[in-house]
Image 1 (cartoon, rainbow over the protein chains, first blue to last red):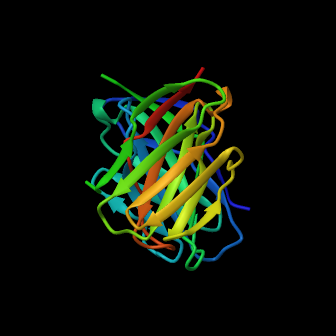
Image 2 (cartoon, each protein chain N blue to C red):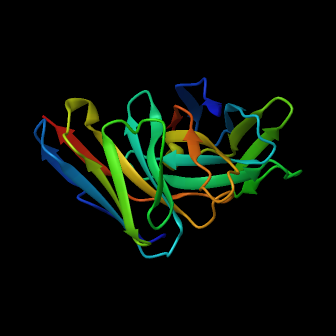
Length: 117
Length: 113
């Protein structure tokens, strides 16, 4: 069965420093997608970055990069040059490629990131 | 921003009453999902739909039913609300069933007294 594990309930980082949020996953499928979402205190879910299981390059989106280590089944999010606005809850999620039935997105429990000025 | 509207955004109800939450999309996406979010649990899938009248259960479906009579609307019904169903409910949509991100609505906060 699918499972996503985020072992860091909360983290602090100094403004302008880089931070890594950990995510490990478990699946028996060969084809899947890995996602990170940000949820600020206002409550909305904001998509940040996506990595496909067959993608050889690590995904990057601006200050966000996904450190994908397939053999270790990890998909850590790296935020470079942290900003105060990065303070939020971050969720790792995985989607298996279930043909024609809408691959369900399974979430980890989240990591609350606090950026200190 | 993806066109997803949830209604109502906030609702307070009493134990035993039926409640229906509506998710409306203007993107014509095939796949729609209902999640609930509770402290310490992240987001958990309740039900999802992969087409009109095609729905299936998620990991926490007990006490919930769904219906999708047209592409743009996905309804979540609590037949007889209980206090354990106090939560924030998110609707999400996706264009593809095996790749790509889900886009989320703004959430509906339900309190069952």
